[in-house]
Image 1 (cartoon, rainbow, N blue to C red):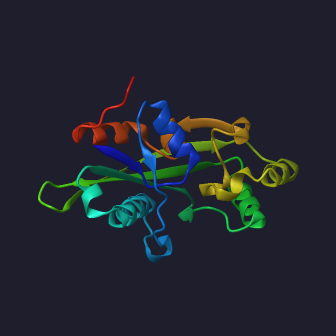
Image 2: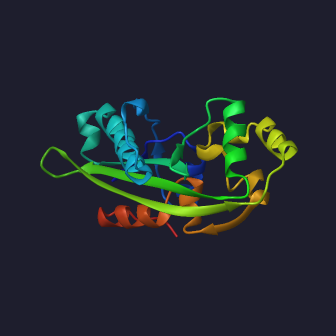
Length: 199
């Protein structure tokens, strides 16, 4: 079965590669703004499924017969506010100031769509959460990090596996979920449909 990653994220691609999976990438063009949800865990589930469905529907019917489409989404929650990707440099700085010296919760959803054997599709959806504690950041550190450009396309305005790792005091939970793809959930889902990695 062909595995298709419905994401243009290099982080998700690299995680799948490191786990030994063969796959192709088709970036989802789904309208994420159409999803309204206050619960961050439920939000990432819905967005992951939306992304996977968009790519599934874009495939020719003949290709769907032997395809598995994997979608994922990540948000950060702090004090009841859902932090997605920053809209600007100033928005990134605002998020980082709010997160400085505190613990945020990263929610990552994953959805898998496969043929159901009856001409339709079956969907599997799950999510995982982890807590990330930052050290105190001063204005100079925030400005320098924002100027690097790294936080501008990251939920919560940071990439834990990048330069920002020097500001992370503690991670409680699965590290890959914070990076952007809960590989333990992905492995379980893919194993259930007969897709295994090459160790």
